[in-house]
Length: 81
Image 1 (cartoon, rainbow, N blue to C red):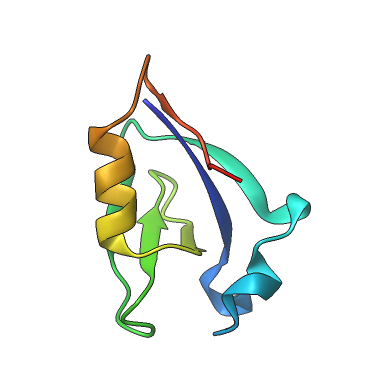
Image 2 (tube, helix red, strand yellow; image 1 turned 180 degrees about the horizontal axis):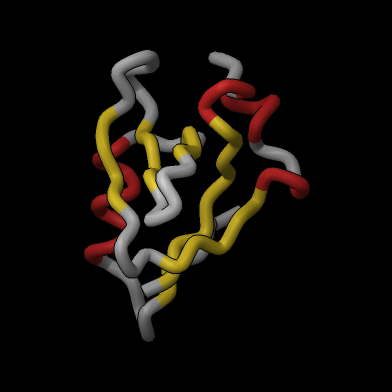
């Protein structure tokens, strides 16, 4: 399963979502062993924790990511621009 998101390292995140939604922040994350959780810092955002323990802040909520994973086709969930 792959998930495409706009994501930045938690330490580099800004509350302005549109700052994060730029091509250089688009990532295709292989979800095996990764976790998604609600952000404790920003209630409208999700955090993606990779098996390496790197944490990315997604420019989406937990619910939005969970819905995209549930609706994924052929093992990949792409961002709809």
